Image (tube, rainbow, N blue to C red; front, side):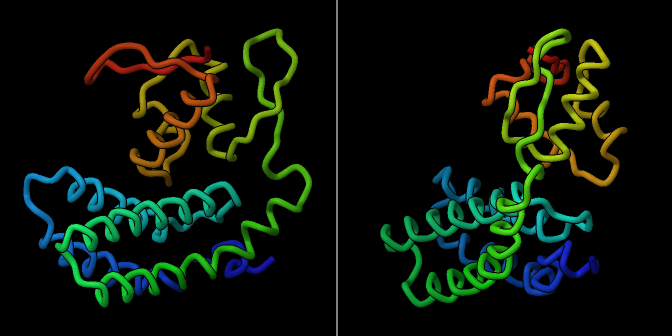
Length: 196
């Protein structure tokens, strides 16, 4: 397969930086004290980060990118309903993000149709039968590392996932926590993760 097929979101990257800058400028109209402003900024950065990732995509990662776009657009529409933004600015931004979503939809559908891409067996604990969970390749790598080691921090996981940002690793860990596959121990700089 050619690389363009494996990484369909490279093309919108050039527009991604410009789009993120535009979102940041629009967010200046949100009240400084409103927590929605910072959430929207974080989401816009997360989208840009995912657009910039050079690694080939899987359907789950692209689905998360689509979900992040929907959440950001929701924040902007709330800003419009509060009178902080005008309708035309929201429509322009929404149209640009929708173009990105349309480019990634065929890849999401394809990976969902291909057998064995999404539902891979993951051992819950040593000695147990595999449990089928919807995990990404990165998450499976994290679970494999945690099963071989007693516990790990985000920096330990960066060693096995050198091309992945800390933010993406944390998001994967949060999803694994939500799925009940791992547990978080400690606080602040002493947070560790281990198999549940």
